[in-house]
Amino acid sequence: MKNEDLYNYVLRLGDDSLILGQRLGEWCGHGPILEEDIAMTNISLDLIGQAMSLLDYAGVLDGQGKDHDALAFLRFENEYRNALLLEQPNGDFANTMMRQFLFDAFRKPLYEKLLESTDMQIAAIAEKSLKETRYHLKHTSEWVIRLGDGTDESHQRAQTALDLLWRYTDELFFQTEEDTTLISLGMVPSMSEIKAEWSKTVLSVLEEATLVIPTNNWQFEGGRRGMHSEHLGFLLADLQYMQRAYPNMKW
Amino acid sequence: MVTKESILSWLDEVCDPEIPVLSLADLGVLRGVEYLNDEWQITITPTYSGCPAMKTMEDDILLKLKEHGVEAKVHLVLSPAWTTDWLSESGRKKLKDFGIAPPENEVDKSVLFAAQTVVPCPRCNSRETKMVSQFGSTACKAHYQCLICSEPFDYFKCLK
Ligand SMILES: [Zn+2]
Image (cartoon, rainbow over all chains, first blue to last red; front, side, top):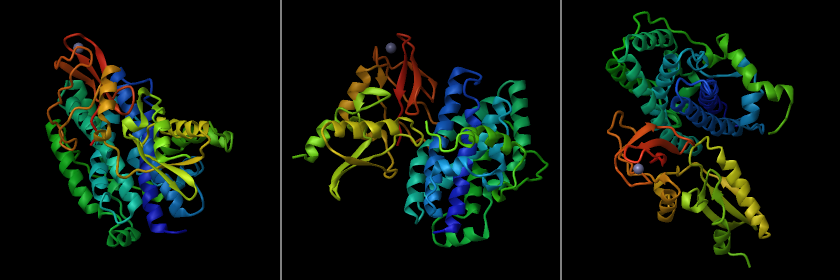
């Protein structure tokens, strides 16, 4: 392998985008209103597009001639490196928006830092993806506020979503021993910087939304090491079905 | 002899499959035409990462050049990232005539809760319009409605 440390890093980014993109796509035709149906599938499309760029690059770093399709469709569950947050079921609209918001608030500062990466391809993907991610964060922040500071029911649903998803947020900032090498080479930023930015955005939006961070701060992790919740297998069964049933089929 | 000018003029006939009045040059997606290693090298950049029209655009370019007996390679580059500033003047006009409001100069997207941009109605030019959704019929468009003539319209949203 050409660069295993960077491969693992890029794979995590690509898997986050792919799995969340697939989850959001499940809303297609089921959105609470037409505009939101379109918004969620648009965001899904951006994420799948970013996943294609990221997984293609992971394939290059791997050096075995794998493209994004090979990485998306032909890996097993324990080979995925996405954070647990992203494979969680959609739940209701508030839950989907909260999950997306917590992720967008993480992705935006990450891409902002990756813009300065000494690795040209990572910097290029970040440059392209950042513009889209800003749109997403704007959209989801507004929804979190509207739902939290809305009716009794929407507030309750948004708070329940936050209570449920908060336990998966620490894992977003997972950093390995090998990442420190990449950080010292200026290829990727340190996660502590990203977490500081994330906290700032999340706290200000949640305050505006009159939502409170749960006091129970027990955090789950595992996805970054390939230890997933029971939900990922079902998602992959759906995602990979065609390639597994008809190997090498093309549209 | 095939020149860069002739390639460019042929490619002028290749349009965005989703907005058929815009050529790839108008859209700013066509980034370069170069003769290198005994082959024409065409460089394009996506409007949005997941834009499903990119593959069609690539095929259409190759098909158009083939009609003129030219073999080429198409390269997709991500940086510098596409911006609506690359939309040509004639492209903006064609959009409006087609019923799609061209991008307005908007405030920085990184600012949350910024005031909304005024997007004039492409039908009656009224400035009294409202955004229905930030996300429209394709990744590059938002959905608006005119409060004067009631026309629902697409807005080619600003991306910087
Ligand atoms: Zn009007």
